[in-house]
Image 1 (cartoon, helix red, strand yellow):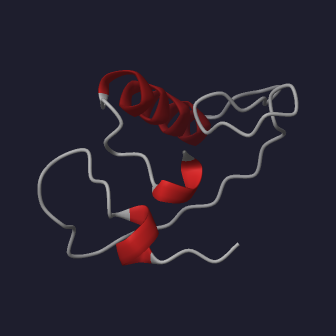
Image 2 (spheres, rainbow, N blue to C red):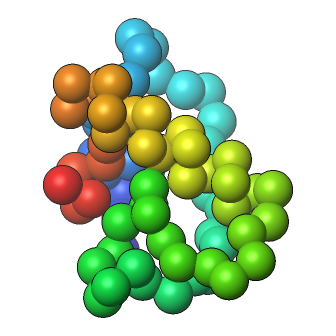
Length: 74
């Protein structure tokens, strides 16, 4: 998959403004029940980075009213 930072990743911000820089981190996990969802990946022994990413994604999905979720992730 090819994504554009401006058109895909930051086009629907959670808060106002456009970031000056973007950091993209990759964390490999197994899908939970065959469904790819950043708020609920399956990992036998969660690590702190995974916990931080999943809680942030879950918060945005529950409280962002559709904002903060990139276009291809809908």
